[in-house]
Length: 417
Ligand SMILES: [Zn+2]
Image 1 (cartoon, rainbow, N blue to C red):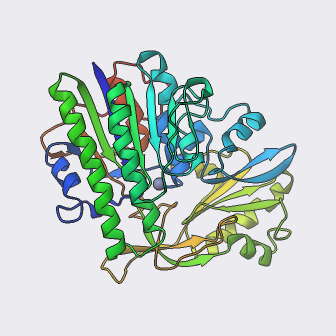
Image 2: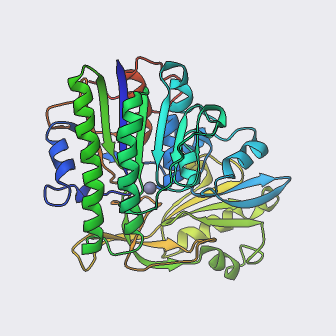
């Protein structure tokens, strides 16, 4: 019986996988295939990346553009927090679809089904399966196919303790039910990395717990293989983190520069996705596009400004008024714990907490674009390293090939074995 099991340690940087810090992951690397050039989507933000993992498509195709996005609703640009549990239902009502590409849960529904255990935001969990083809167990909502209630909803905290309880349930329930696809998406180490410095003792203690959870799944999968199951085991992360070096209120800057009418105006919206900003321009303000672009390109806080016609190069498209993407300035500065990689962030619209010296992500910085990927199973073994292009959108086709299903309509490619 062919099955796939995926464990995601949210926010884990590739350079944090060492024998001392993550002994279970390091041991797994010695028997799996690792991808030292693995990259994630833009923005490197969990909700958009979740949709890219689930569909094998870039945001340009699945149309969930970020963690914070705008939609054109009755001629008005409306900003939205994608983390809210009801956002994708709202997007379906506005645009005709929650995601414009089929998810793994939809594809495997007639072939053994999918079960997701997820301890990040409700919106990120929903992005795996917004049309309810499989099971989702998230700490604030759980549901079965068709949105059916489940007898045993997941109720855990967003921390290492909650992740551990979720992992125990994942092993006892999701693995034993043997769906075609079982996904465990841990909230750590992302959650702690937003609150403490990268490499600090508090961070490393939680990272060890996340590593232990991954190790428990590895051991359980090994038992199932010994009983004859053909399991492809994927262990990785959705993005890394950079250290926050400062914060820019991009919307306020645009107002000061005379490029946005006022703080609450909807002519131009700059929506923070952590270390990046998605900038939307209302169609009636088209004449402002050139000035906006020049202004953004001149700003010392803008690391990379992607113009409308170049959005495709980062997997985006000019949908819903998206005009520019900005990855804020990042550099190689080393923090107090010897961890390289700092970036400015864009001040968020809803959660105003800015924590200089702690971790963040969302842009194209070197370390936030250095997540972890290791695959073990049929065709993937031996502790080898596979150099070359490897992207989050390649995971879905690789999983589908293992399951003997078509990956038609995805942007990614199954890795050669
Ligand atoms: Zn994440």
